[in-house]
Amino acid sequence: MAVAMRSLLLLPHPLPSPFPSSLGNNNKHLAFKPAAPTARRSSRTLAGAQRATWLPGLDPPPHLDGSLVGDFGFDPLGLGEDPKSLKWYVQAELVHCRFAMAGVAGILVTDLLRVTGNSNIPVWYEAGALKFDFASTETLFIVQLLLMGFVETKRYMDFLYPGSQAKEGTFFGLEAALEGLEPGYPGGPLLNPLGLAKDVNRAHDWKLKEIKNGRLAMVAMLGIFVQAYVTHVGPIENLIVHLSNPWHRTVIQTLAGS
Image 1 (spheres, one colour):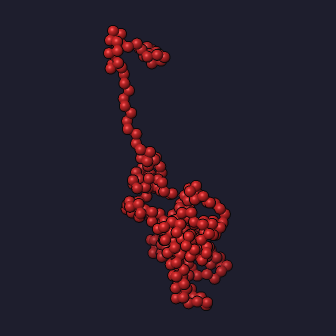
Image 2 (image 1 turned 120 degrees about the horizontal axis):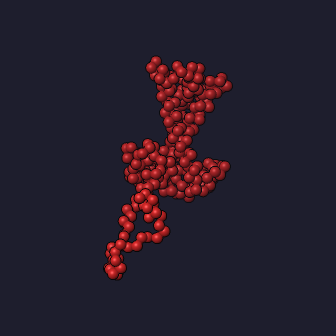
Image 3 (image 1 turned 180 degrees about the vertical axis):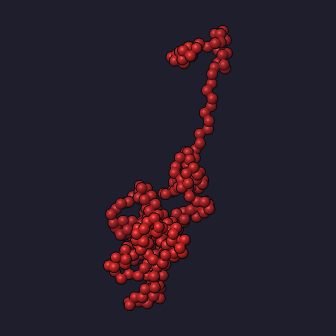
């Protein structure tokens, strides 16, 4: 029986119709019709189901369709449901990432110099109280407020009206040197001296690396804040203490002792 069934399955041509030929053309309604294919999901749905998300198995929200650089479907509070708000949050995250990367690098380098005794530098959270001979703290604060206010205003206006700031010529004549291609990604010889992403529209990999490193830097900055609050020392000193006795000098023992 099994051999007979296998032979039937291996036949190169379909079996003869069991209906008599006298039916003529009337047997066409009896012919086998394959089932209609099920409706295909949209490419966006398939992409959303297949792309990586911050929590495996989680369906990303509809407003995060994977088109943004570094989009892993993370928006538990729904802050980006409004397209205008989402556009602003993207720019805000990018700026915070860059500040965090600069801050972490500055803290680690200065803390390393301080611990090794190569420079008389205060711990990072006391650097703001350092007095300078050439200017008072109030003067430095006002100067920084004016300069950062001017730059941030220009950045915000470029966000609202992309390319407008490069045409006005009010940035001390540096518009041509900055040569911004889109909001958040200025270029030119000043900010892109190596020419790594001359065509910003084809620089997806560089954008993704930057946003990933920036998010890691923000997490590291938060850890440095908490670490300084608990231990009252810099990150390099905390690392040295941990390496001196890795199994007993950990964050758990530190929090338990505090």
